[in-house]
Image (cartoon, rainbow, N blue to C red; front, side):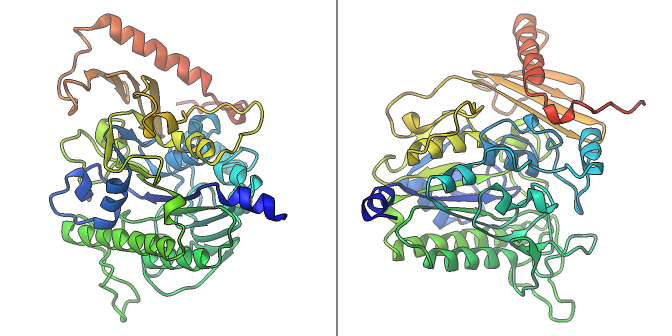
Length: 440
């Protein structure tokens, strides 16, 4: 590559995207956690912008990760409205149908953020939880990552790195790898080692940690006799240690960026893939992981970009995971393929202070077994369909979703029902064209 081209590329920002797993809306000190100390993640917020109305695209892992990687609603790909089960299990009818055909996962034909950045000259790597397909054709390097190290499925023992069924899920690129250590530490160490090898080319580093997803295990609780640490689900003190270890390792990665002199031209993002499960703290928000109430989908969201985003900024802009793809491409000056339409929006005008928050209408639908949960948010109004039971709320007056306004607002209810129905038709996946719903 010529010197002029290299110099032009080096002006592009580097990108580091941290993703926590099942972290509750109130599980960081910068989001008013009463018991978790998270100085390194807080530091990202202090140097950048904190979103008070940031949402995951789905109430579970795989759905949000699909949207995050593509900038589009995950429903467009089919079979990804629920977390893929350990061992490559489809957990609802359409997902099971795809699994039997060897098609359960994010198709490599879909344009993804890492592939688009790679094609623009970025080095790319992913270290952490993938959860977008077990088969070789769905793995990270098929989606544009130069390197991968992490677990393929939804959850694993933090020390043995095995799923509940005993299946080894820790991989380097396309092959399983035996390692010793706590997963959070391993992922951060791999990221730091990769950063140390960077040239002046821009890079995209994706760090999707599995912490603090179950099993809840003490990072310092390793038992040589069992080869792991005891599982302490619903033990808040251990959960707190897991989040604080996550924060410490994020701090180590940020310290490496600073040591390289790359911290001043790096966009740093921190998100969670859905709301907290019963181990987490969603504060006053209703519901938890797997629901489309605020507690299931509203999550911490922070972006730092020195020199572009004013330090310590807070915004009520409604944002979703899928906004990251168009936003980061815009910030990097990378054009998507012709004809590609994102469902997410470019947030750069808002986060850089060039315009006020953008009004928008956004949708959710998650499925597991026979349960379907949906929601639409239009401005401050939100209609929730919880497996057939509908409620209407105005989040400006009732963030906790305690006052059902459905009966008192038939016109608004009808309007949102129509928008939700139209959206469901719009995002129907071509991959499901041959699917026939099983008879009851």
